[in-house]
Image 1 (cartoon, rainbow, N blue to C red):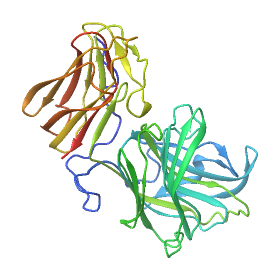
Image 2 (image 1 turned 180 degrees about the vertical axis):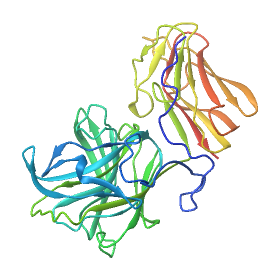
Image 3 (image 1 turned 180 degrees about the horizontal axis):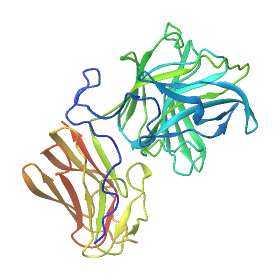
Image 4 (image 1 turned 90 degrees about the vertical axis):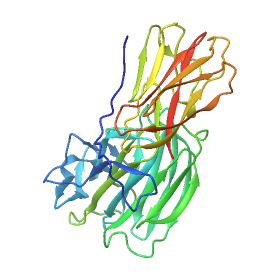
Length: 371
């Protein structure tokens, strides 16, 4: 038997709720920039050359509980200006993302709090699918927010929730709190914990993959200048989780048995599926639950594919009450299958295991929805 990707490399803060986050969200990741340098166990530096600047780690500093990104006028790698940024090593899907920030007052710079799969070496990656821009600011008096869909290193679609929101103050004159709530169906944006915009973003509009958090400032447009004394400032990075989604080959997923391979059909939101026709095959999903509670459990079923011979399967749900079993008939329509509602303790004591009853098993995603 072989288990793969069973643990997520994230900071867990157990039992904490922020009164300002939406109901039933629990704090899972936070960064308060303690000490005098970036914690490279949690963050990588942005190091690409893009638009009008080359991004350098030396432009990023930490002091007094804040992260500073200082734009500079200097010639590096064919650019006449340098910016910078950091990207979380931890990746997330749905949840509530928040930061407190003040943008640079230097003209021509693009300061942002955003999320996309990547490590900062480039923004044109093979792995990126969803980009969420909680805020993009090129003028201190305007805030842009929205999403982009990526495929094969290109943006194939985008939608602004508001491309020119006027906050009524200069975002370079003081610290303000920006947040976005990402759910399976929508994005909701907040400024100083007041809702300012909401837009649909359905799983069919783009692949909802796991994303890293980016805090960045890059040169974007002319006229541009850099005084060297007006940094973008960040503090209080937070990620809150309510619902847990675990996809095939993602952290919390494990395979047992023989003959596993990538499935022939896409899973939830065009994500990867994994398949096996071995009678001893099973796929286990183990959420790292931050706060004990009641959760509705659902599994994404891929309808019978004659080429693969998908058969009926069984879902074994291990909850606080013990083990329960639900059958998923082979002719069940592709989509979410409700496996019931259960109580789960904090930690990794609960699980869902899918196993074939006859034919082949094609594993996609399981979700645990807080109730």
